[in-house]
Length: 260
Figure 1 (cartoon, rainbow, N blue to C red):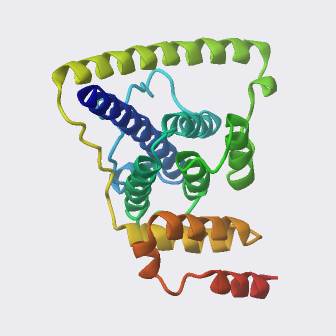
Figure 2 (figure 1 turned 135 degrees about the vertical axis):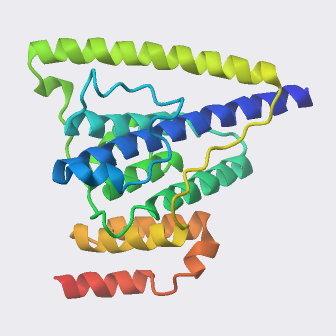
């Protein structure tokens, strides 16, 4: 029984690692797209940790991405994260959130000063409320994306021809991803190996935290998104919060009072 439970947990963690990795793939694709829009040489200055890996199934030459498609892709991965992090064991859930939250901050910590903050930063909040299950449905995720990032063009906004193409391409992508995931999980389970969680580190978590904090203070007109960031870090990574005494609810209130 114990062996079965251990195997089940390993498979669950492998599945979660795959979903989180695909979330980083979506972020890196959006990151690259937004930078190339401004500067064709951007691809030479951005470090990538997930694009072009064996779990990246995109063919951007055959199917060139656009802004709406990439926004929708990140939103879709938020939904996948939400469903994947449903653990009955509270301790396991909290450990899982801590690991992936720190990994995400280390990824943001490597964005670099040469990359200006944009929607990539704004997507942090929908990703984190999905990862930590601070929402209760996919509709809540869509609402969070609209609130913190912006409205994504929905299927109802497309022409009939565009709708048909979107449905076909979406179904093909789903079938391929579902097949590959099942095959990978089967091979992993049969191997008997322990899961090795993927690292997306390209900077320090403290730099990622400070970057997000400063970005949110400047981007949002109200304090709630900034306080949500601070509360999440305080709850799951208290040792990191302690390294940033200048970041507090009092400092946030003062900043937004002066911003009026």
